[in-house]
Length: 441
Image 1: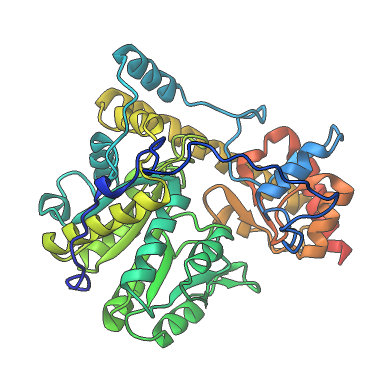
Image 2: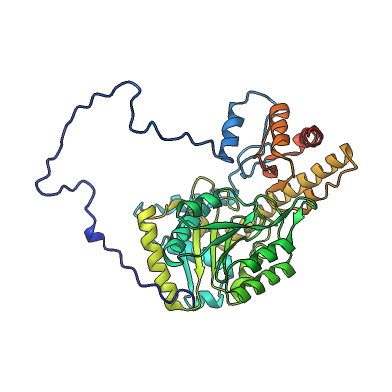
């Protein structure tokens, strides 16, 4: 097993000076007057960081005063009126939580037990052998980003020298998360600009050429930003190659149940790899499928070969989480656990997910039809062959600038649009903007 050399970590809270405590002999307060010169600062050499490539789109959108403006940047679901949506099932779960009048105590570092059970069951299926045999590390964390960051810190310490291979393109924050922990990352080919589809041959060649024992970051479903996933047969070939090369797969699962409207179907890839005997990382997020964007609900999982290895890994992940954020937030996890562990609410949630997925699928079809009407000489089939929230249009940065400057369509510079932010009333205008922008350069 790959994690047998990890020692058990113990967290010593007694060595931590309590908040408000004072060392013996230290004055309670030392007052010092500092005269600052105008314009002088110790931080004058700090460079200005450009706006976040995704969240910065929303900032620019808010500044616009145009009544025609359209925000297709951030992957957050909107109703057909383009308003934020809170699921009915979430409201029902919140009422149950409120009526229970529970306390506000800290959670254990590993998180809410009912949530951890629910998230493992969703990922692998209730009763999966890895769960029954205590081989699954499941640390309740801060949505997908926090989960990835804990795993990155773990890789930096216990898988030293390993390179993480990420798809080109990928979610922009992947590079930041691994890079900030000093973990080397490299691209593998993924997107074929000619076909606006998957470059499976290039992907397999790059995974094959990666040094044995590398870490391969994969999107569990609804690849971000392309919306292009391998077929089940291709997933099997990727799993076989990981076994051959002793690679460690790492799935980022941000859209389970939201991509196709089916929780089981969207869990196909990580389950395949785990069932093939691969020790597998999985980062999970509930921002999209439960609409809990601001609650930061997620988990980092690592399915190990033995229960002993899982225990050691959990001890170290808890140590890392303790230093990063100490304890995960409670409220959103209680919402998720309440829904998943209640048969009636769980069924209602699945129906609402199917509804959200279905609305996006409808505007995909409408957009393709509108594009084909305006330019029948171009192949627009990629719009409906892609899945999930996004469509990867193939627009260049210059063409994206035309989309924003001329048409007030706000989107990321890589050409990705979030169809979750589109409704039927805006389809024609978006089609006009896309066709004009492709013709502009």
